[in-house]
Image (cartoon, rainbow, N blue to C red):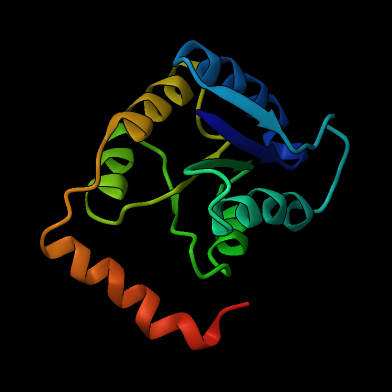
Length: 149
């Protein structure tokens, strides 16, 4: 599976760690930048990954900035994206089980490389529970589709 990944300057080091973790998990990261720790605007990188997931080109994506919030807010503007700010293994699990999240947004300034690897492993290996959660995820689409990009 190919995993598109991007970060801003504040998430650059964490993105490099995440790429290694993704490869260790047996997936192929495709890096959409940034490619240095020099200051950039996070939305320019978030949209590149969000567009790929939104269009169904890839099942999952990874976005990283200092807090994870900016990337998450940007990605969630796309109608088929369910981006989740993940800072623990429990949140990684619940975002997949209950919300069918398809983009994981990481706070690059808060997680070390071991934590990044752990949350990615949980995120990619956890399945959506469906059931009562399916109705709720469908409501997200139904209630927001007229507002989509």
